[in-house]
Amino acid sequence: MLISPQHFTMRFFKIFGGVDGKGFLDAQFTELQHLQDENNPNFVSEVVSLFFEDSERLLNELSRTLDQQIVDFRKVDAHVHQLKGSSASIGAQRVKNVCLAFRSCCDENNLEGCLGCLQQVRQECYLVKNKLDALFRLEQQILAAGGAVPIMSKD
Image (cartoon, rainbow, N blue to C red; front, side, top):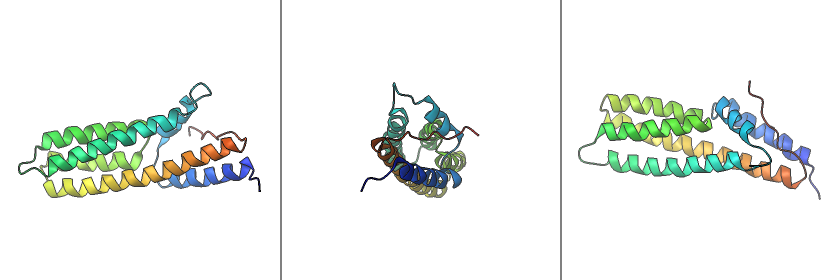
């Protein structure tokens, strides 16, 4: 049975609405989509993939730094600042928001708060990664079915 591109497109809007409607993504993600074209059809997925590679490295570094006998909160803050910036660049709003709270804990030298934020930011990265992976799989299905991937509006 052949499935129409419209079927996949409807699923795309449902998933995107769930991702966007729950604050996982902000307008920056839509901006990335608008930068993608036929010359670079995988632009968004490549940028997002780089973000997740980098975030995994940063999360591991944060774990190691927070596990030290004497925690260097400036170093923790520098890693969190980097994670906040890269999450903002792809529109991962909930990750960015946890990073803001994480940085406040760093400013207060609050180890317990930092450890809690580390767990929370890991969870938010996991959630947005799963949502975006599903979205990118659907994009491939839409294209394979002969359809065009919808671009979300900027507003």
